[in-house]
Length: 475
Image (cartoon, rainbow, N blue to C red; front, side):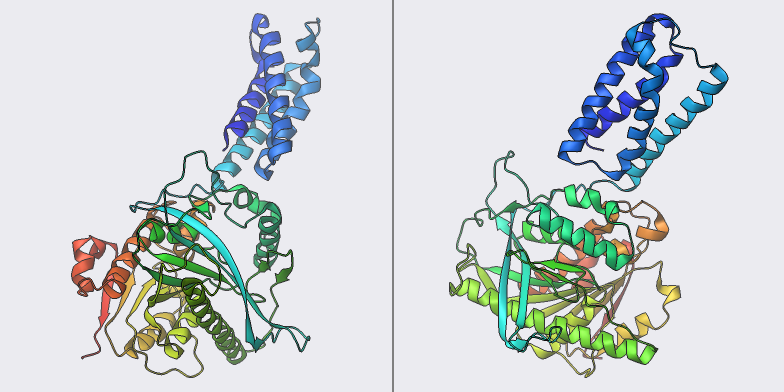
């Protein structure tokens, strides 16, 4: 909870319990509790009231009329019989406890502090792909418009500098994204109040870290319906270790994409009636994401060359680029690597490849998978293994115990800590493992460090996290 929410809870509890205190304390406690709870409610109404606090406010509203006489110091303040007041007070306490429990289960995401040597800056870039007609609209002149959020190593900013919001550059964008994601997942919009309010560790448009060293690039494709924000904690950690991470929104595939001009593009619902149609649709969407990733790498090259004005000009090493996909984004990552030799490595975060024309590719792959959902998806690992075997170089598959599918996103930071939902690694441990593994792989593949990945995993203690399978192209 935020400090002001904690004040509201304490005031509400004191207001409910004031009736049961010795007479000499009732008036002072009731008056102070009423003032505190009312003032904190007003503040929350101004700065943003989360749904979790609604039961607490209901308890305050219910109790206030019954404590009014006590606060005025008039006799008869306890006219309500104890056998009526007792259940009422108990119900109000339960409402307050329910609000606190909901706030704990659905917190405002608290992003782990990056552990690398660099502070983290962030920026959102937009561009159009003039050679790609937009197939989801009927306008013959419409071309593909894209945007990505970039996290990069930055100069340290003063503590008082405002950090970047989680879901968007502005409150309007954050609300549009929250509404779109809620509609996509079938979850009420108010559940995402915490994400709308959340702040990350990144500073918008912070100066790039000093020096002339060019920085390797990591492009990220989110899962089905999701957007560029999905793996913010992971991206910030990579940026703090000297990588530039560019996470894409995929218009009409992501739940909601809001451009700087105010235009919001919603998810284009797709229907299918058979497994074969579902497979074909997955391959088509993967191809769209692959072309978006190819386009993004080209645009990063324009930023680096100065053709497009950017604070990252001259600092992006697009010759050292990896492509990463999460869930349904893995299909786009594999296709992008197969069709674009500019990518030097591939990382698959708990997803399978979808490719209508599977063939060999030259990049090494690191695939991380969850453990708890494998029994329900018997075709997943075999299909992923066959894709890894098609690489002409050594690739790796690591299954991490205690993980579920959402573990490989920011979801553990805001979802209820239920193992069947987010795994058993807590709110931040899953992200720590995932980032350490991916940074070890990227250091080996993009920074010319030793490529003995099994040895590297053992050196950093990764072996304890799960079973590693090595797909050696020489065998």
